[in-house]
Length: 331
Image 1 (cartoon, rainbow, N blue to C red):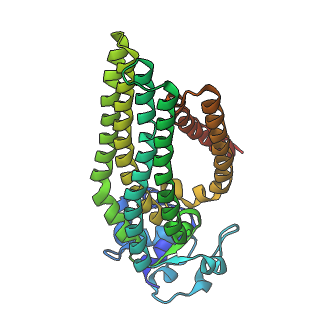
Image 2 (cartoon, rainbow, N blue to C red; image 1 turned 180 degrees about the horizontal axis):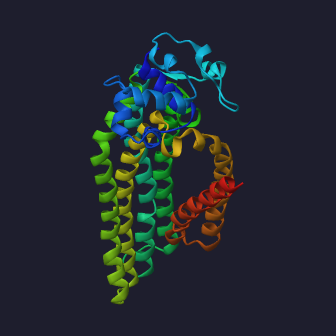
Image 3 (cartoon, rainbow, N blue to C red; image 1 turned 180 degrees about the vertical axis):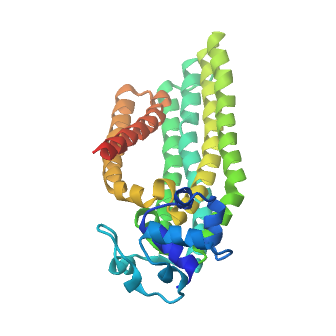
């Protein structure tokens, strides 16, 4: 094992990102990236600092052969046996994973858009029937609208299931700690840096589209527009939200794939240790929200407005998980 691989292995064993290691050594992240990519070698002072920081000998760092006996593990550290037990991601597997995530991002984004668009026809038909713009009863309008809503959701559900099944073999990258073959981090880091502009642009475009839909709706409400006009503007808003979510989901899924390979952010080793409880809370939470949505919608018959439960629940869920994580850190 060469020096670059040893730095990667020991850094991950301590659960540090490249930025964190760079901060401890008072160097730039680019310097650490070059060390791990085999593009440069630390000078003697940095080798001594690495030796002290990782609890290993300088001899171990600079010798190419892996001599585990030279590593001085401290209490609580994972030993060689635990390191061997961790799955290892190869360069080929990392490339396949990134390709699958890009492909799935487009399909999942489409499914999300279909779900957001699903109540549009229901809202329009009910508003037009109520104002006499179409010669059908409100019940008939609601029936056609609900049927359209269910058809779009029925089209979206298989998309989610099929892509979830396709990505299932890479689930360990998202949820478990792992090691990477030499070159994987360099590939992921390089692609992440090249994608940064597209990621920022996608988020910005999504926010702009949502704001463009909200502005005319607010103006119409302030000017006392009719219910039909307001409903039409809500439908326009939903259409723009679907386009915004489509773009945001695409770029976020790709960005997440880089973070998963690099084990950074929400996919750091520490975060993965917190995930099991978060997943349990999420399962219970969204099951309750679904039950509440269906109960309120069927009881009130206001399908055209009860969709607001979902965005509110999404914001509340982020707050719940944030509070839960803060509580566990304090403990």
